[in-house]
Length: 235
Image (tube, rainbow, N blue to C red; front, side):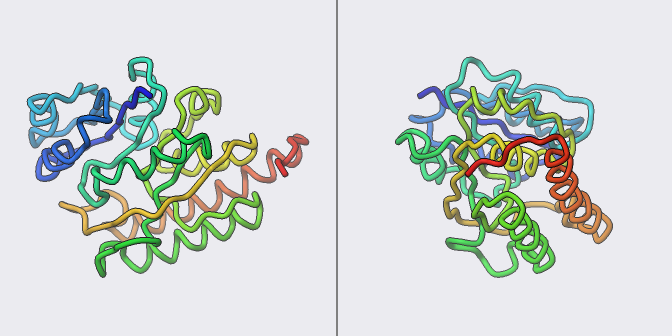
């Protein structure tokens, strides 16, 4: 299996070196750092450490992930990982194993099911993630507990989903479209630690509230949009 890793970045010079150093070299075929106008030397550090740097001037987490997916060189599996070192890159095999074994099409790293340092995930993020996960279980019948950014998927399926969200709603869109299409979305526990640097979303009250509202409304809107269209729900 050819594995490509996509890492969206914006001013992650303090952490990107540690992220890249911890990726298991015997598993990963290529690393794509998709950088959005960093001014702290992030792309230069990534390039020196062997990553292929893609410059994406348009802001948006989803846009960076889509750019990385489009730029990956013939992968079988694509992994998405944040550049802040909150997830542990050496746990990548945990996400790959269910896919390689044929038990999953998409895997999600749950930050709530393994080792987590106290305070690594702020209480309002825990609450918001549990609320969103509960709504997805209710409306889509998919048993998940978290909407974490550390995830992997078969490249052909990710492209078939025709993902288009350009903001933080992209991560939710993958789950919703995957569930609706009947693909096997499997959650695996991963460790989670305090990020290096300040979060661009959860680091501010405005960012946290805005992200929560957008994600929850997206879950509901997507459900009723496809219900009206008569899209069958997988068993």
